[in-house]
Length: 108
Image 1 (cartoon, rainbow, N blue to C red):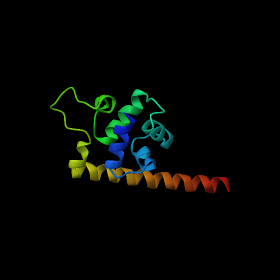
Image 2 (cartoon, one colour):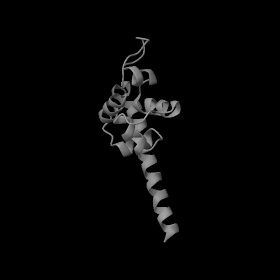
Image 3 (spheres, rainbow, N blue to C red):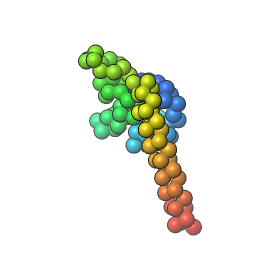
């Protein structure tokens, strides 16, 4: 499963930090999962699958039971969806940076 997550993340051109924001999880979770050191809770697995534009079934097994479903990383062929995800990612990174800056001001 970790290799499929890494392959999908790399196909999207994202660093672990960027992908963690997109998948609403931590960099540690992404890193440990990609290396096979961590098993995921269902909600985290679902978030990662959604961020990759694939199914939880594919991440677990590498296969789809229903051949009518789009292939893994189908998002890559859908420019509109990719643009939406990248726009969301940019907003999340900007918000995260603002929150960090405000936190630093509060502690100085």
